[in-house]
Image 1 (cartoon, rainbow, N blue to C red):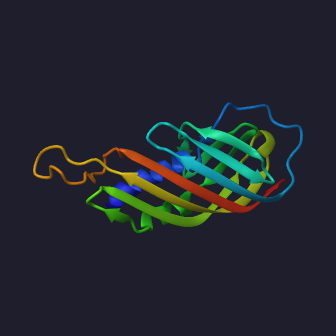
Image 2 (cartoon, rainbow, N blue to C red):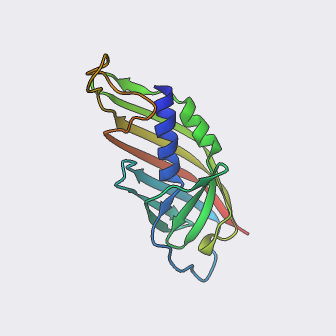
Image 3 (tube, one colour):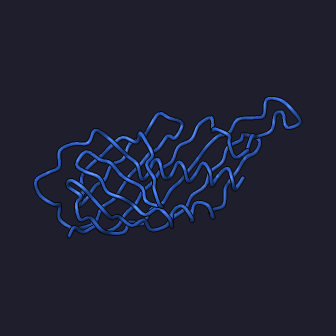
Length: 178
């Protein structure tokens, strides 16, 4: 179960939180003021996408459509620019989080909280820095084995695709621009 949660949760977290993208718009003429931001994200990793909204010192939004992760950094593409996030601590927290499960319904959930550092922005977000405290809540339903000795049991293998899954993520913290 831990391997399923780690595989699904990390892929989902990374694809959802860190790779929200929409049509890349023209950057605004001036850098936003430093201040507090809150990031809201819903993610449906089964391929139908989700939505990201950032409020406060940054007001922007995007649709979740793809994952781009390299060297523990994830790229966020929004209408007014991009920035990277260091996902190492939230990934580790989700891996270590206990999973609540109901094997009779094949439903599972997990949550974790950890800091995520912002860096390397472009467009409106050039010179961004700061740390947001992220909380992720993940819920998913897995299929049953259809044949064999495990027929009728929850399929918790590492390569299983959930029947349905959704993540709710909120990150709050301060950003600044150099």
